[in-house]
Structure formats: C-alpha cells, structure tokens
Amino acid sequence: MQGVLGLGSGALVGFSLGLIGGGGSILSVPLMVYVVGVADAHVAIGTSAIAVAANAAINLSNHARGGTVRWSCALPFAAAGIFGALAGAVFGKMLDGRKLLELFALLMLVIAILMLRTRSRDGLPDAQMSWDNMPAIAGLGLATGGLSGFFGIGGGFLIVPALMLATGMPIINAIGSSLVAVTAFGLSTAASYAWSGLVSWKLAGLFIAGGLAGGVIGTRLARSLSAERGVLNVVFAVVIIAVALYMLTRNLFAF
Image (cartoon, rainbow, N blue to C red):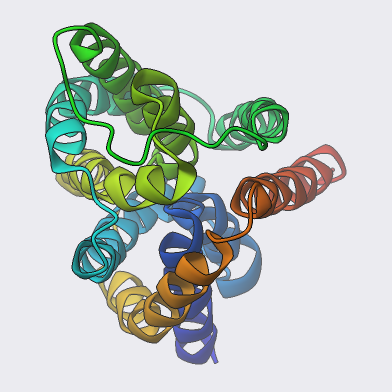
C-alpha cells in the first residue's frame, strides 16, 4: 500500500512541477508525512528534495522542448542559489521538524498573496539577463536558494515569482526557467540530507517513477493555460494556499 501511495503522490508532484514549475516539495513533504506515513519530518524533507530534483529535471526537458526556458536568466540564478541552498540546509536541520513545517506554510501564504496581486501583468516574453538585471538575478537567486535549503524544498514557489521580479518575464517563462534552479537547489539540499542519513531511497524512487507521467500532463496543461491572461498566476496561488492551510491545520491540531 505504501508503494501505491508513493507512486500516486509522485504523479501529483510531477504534475505540479510541470504545471506551475513549483509546488513539488510543497506537495511532496506533506504527502510523505500525512499520506505515505513517513514519521520523521527531516527524512520526509530529505527524500522529497531528491524526488523533486529528479522530477524537476524531467519537466525541465519538457519545457525546454516547448521553448519556454530563458537560459541566460535561469543558469546564473541557479548558480547563485546553490550556495544559499547549501548554507540553508545546515540551519534547517537544527530546527524542530514540526516548527519547520509551520514556518514553511506561513511563507507559502505570503507568496500566494503576492502572486495574486501581480496576476494581471503581461511580462516580457523575450526577457534576457543584462547588466541592469544581473544584480537582481544573482541576489534573488542567493536568497531563494537559502530559503530552499532551510525549508528543504526545491523552491519553485519562490523561484517563479523571484524570476518574474528580477527580469519581468511572463509566468510561463518563469515556470520553465525555474526548473533549472529547482533541480540545482533540490540536488544541493538532497546531498546535505543524504550525508546525514536522512533519505529513504526506495520512497524517492517511487516518487520519481510516479512523477514521469504527471509531469507530461502538467506541462501540456501549463502551455494551454498560459494563453489566458492571469490564469496560471491564480492556479499557482490557489495550489499554495490550499496546501498551506492544510499543513497549518494538521500542525495546530496535532496535539
């Protein structure tokens, strides 16, 4: 039964990554804890980081074939973020697992509100890195990488709005481009947790396998929704709000 739940949960994670470029760890961490039944929150976070990184790499190839990835922005953003992710993971492991999940949920709600407020912006579809936006790309990459490592997440729900803020690109391009950093941040965080023995490799494999099919469906739906102004922003925000409220409810009434 745990194997079936792992495959199904992985499919949902892959779908989310393909659709909104994030939400992988937002979904996989609570799915591992509350659905699959992983008792240790830190093991759930470490295993999630590996599964999300692998699924993000798969979805990145899907978006790249569709031409939505802006490599000149995505690569330096990810490079800066790797350093932040490694440092953040060290501090994240020092905090109580339940408290980590609560802080995670509160941060998600803030991001969701920001995405709803910017849903009507068209963006610059040909956005590229320049001398003007390079400091913002590097700075926000470092910051989101640190938060990604601290919370043990791939970071897509942070990276998508950060890329939009730094470069002005539309959400569909931010989604595709974010997967470069999600992959890099996830691998950096996963390496730290694996070194500490906080990874279930069997469960990670199940999540990755399930995510293959979900990712293909999510990517196709993202391209379809991107034609409607603001729709992807709303979908992005709604997913985050729903999962954040669920996580807060489970933690507040756990005792």
